[in-house]
Image (cartoon, rainbow, N blue to C red; front, side, top):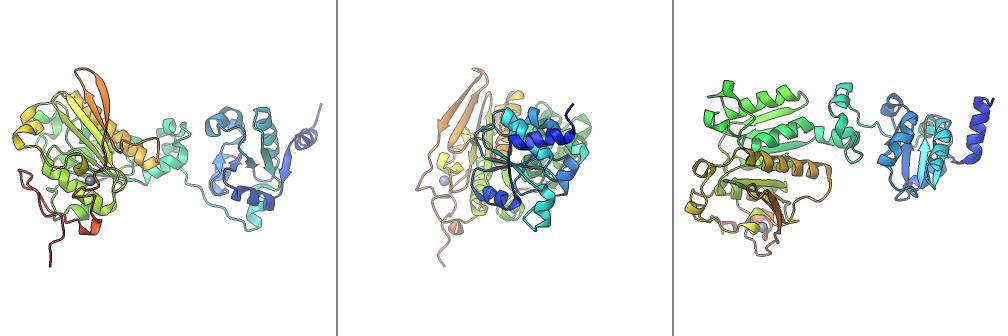
Length: 392
Ligand SMILES: [Zn+2]
């Protein structure tokens, strides 16, 4: 029966080993993948920058999910070079064609003073809570840590804000700001699922905070029980990564649009009307803005708010969930955001359609330098306000 030494010798005879200096050169070449096969507690103490981490025991089951390209150059390492030799042999058996094992491992790398980092890590509770995210290679620990460090501001804790806030909090977005100056009313409960009977008469932001923190203690809920206006919008928006707009009126949408352009913060727009909903993403100065899409607000009689028009209660659940999805995609850089596209949902047909929205080079808001953009308020009739800086 072969001994451990025999097995190691056989593995080393089958693979290519490189020293730490050659590994460093290899890693500087774009496209080279560095794979750490140590246990989680070793990895968390320090690792090579950008390393993919799969403990040796999970290599066969997880490598396909984390590295689809079988011809990518791979440098695999462990603490001293033994486990990585066996791992390199396994990878070759799995069809990976260009794998080398780093002799001396992380310990030698570190002793020689080469670059390493302390990887972001999650607590055991977080690993359990976000397990289904961690199983997605596109999210994993890196993406989850990014979500936990992210800040999303919701405008409104109503029909759209409720599902958006619940899903963002559940996903572990670390800071959720909520602006709303209403109190919870029994007529809200048909669709505003953040609130409940016990909260009737409470401030909506307080009710929202209770619901969200009871669901996920990782989330810091910051409340703004104020009317959003030209006087406070820049101070409130500052520091947020994404704005989720769930307002039901044109003056606020224009105000939100202009402030987001000024501060370079993407806006995830959602709106609902009776049985129809829309969603889009406005990426400042990279795609169209809300004013490119709606240069002038419709006359008030054609644009009734929810209070006047009625809405089927599930509808904001669908559109608000799409807004949460788009916000998370933006935070993680996943897929194709709804930039330059308007998604229209018809509940009665049960259909989704996407319309292309072009950026207007003459747009009064995103077509001018952001320093020239004046943050001012619309009146109820949404009359145009001065966009150019006043002549002094
Ligand atoms: Zn525009």
